[in-house]
Length: 442
Image: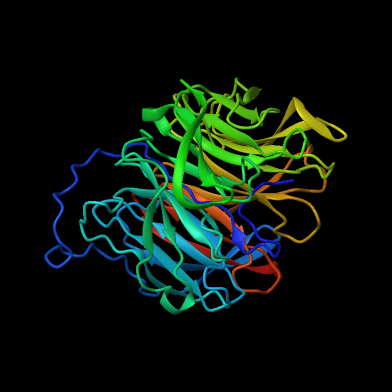
C-alpha cells in the first residue's frame, strides 16, 4: 500500500522536485509594503510549434507549457479545481519566487496563474522548489505543501476553491522560520493515524536529516505543527517518500543520502508516535542516489524501490559506480523489507536525477521514465519487456535538455494513456509535457 496524498480516483497525485545543488545563497531584499513592492518576473507561455517525437514503439507530441523561469525545479500534478482533469503546479526561485498554477482544460492546454505572486513581502517564501499536494485542512480541497530552500522552512498554501483559484492562495507555516536548514523535499501522509495529513521532509546538505511534522489535533487542521526527528547526521538528504515496505499497515519512509551514498527506509515504530524509527539500508555501495519512488515493479504484492543515481557524482559519467537507474527487489513472496536485490534498468545514464515507474505502453507492466541533470541533460523512457529482471530498452525523448530534473507521469489529456510532464532548471528553465500518442505507426 502506498501512503500518498491520493484520493480514490487518483486526483491528489504525486509530489514535485527540487535541486538546491549549485544555488548561490542570495540576500533577501528588505520587506516593503505590497503597494510599493514591484511584482516578480513572469515566465512566458508563448507557444512553440509542437514537435513529434518517435521514441521506440511509442510516439509523443512535445509541448512547451511555460519558459523563462529563474529556477524551474519543482513540479506536481493534481486536480486542483475539481473539474476531473489533472492540473500542474510549477515552482520558481529568486528573483521570480513564484508558485504557478497551470490549469488544464482537459485536453492538455494549460492556462497559468499564481498561487504565489512574489512581492518581496517579509513573510513570503523565496526559493520555492519541491512540493507535494494533499488536503491539509480537511476541507475536501487539495492544498500545496512546499519547501523554501533559501529561508530554510516549509509552508503550505490553502486552496481557496474554484471561484478564487486563480487568485493568490492563503499562506500558512508548517515549520518555524529556519527550523529546517536546507529544506529540500516533502511527502504527505497520515503518519500518526489520527485522520489528518502530516508532513515528512528531507533537508539537503545544510540539515542532513529527516524529520516529520505532526499536524497537531485529533484530527489537525494545519494550524499547529510539531517537528519530530526521524534521523540525523545523514549526508545531504534528498528523496523522502512514504510507503508500507514491511506490510504491517503502517506508513514507512524511503530516503536517500547523496553524499552518504545510501538508499534506506525507516520502519514506522510499533509504539505510538513519537518513537524511534528503525533504519534499514537498501544500498550503500552505489554512488550519489538522488530521487526515486516506491513501486511494485515485479507485481508480487510488495513494494520495491526505483532509484536514479549520479547527479553531481564524483566519478565520470561512464563509471559503473553511479550514473544509472536501478530498481531494488523487496525479496520474498511478498517481501517484508528485510532483503533487497538490485536490478539494472539503465547503466551509463549520466547524472540521473529522478526515475518514475508507469505503464507507458499499456502492456500491463511497469516502464520507467528518467531525467538526467547537467548541461547535457536528457529525458528518456525505458521499456520493460515483460520481466523487470531482464534487460530494458532505452528510448530517448529529448536530448541536450539542460539540467532536466523533476518528472511526473499522468494522463493529462484524458485519453487513457499516460503522458509525461517535466521541468528543467538553469540552462533550460522551462516546463514541457509529452502527449502519449500511442504506438509508433512508422
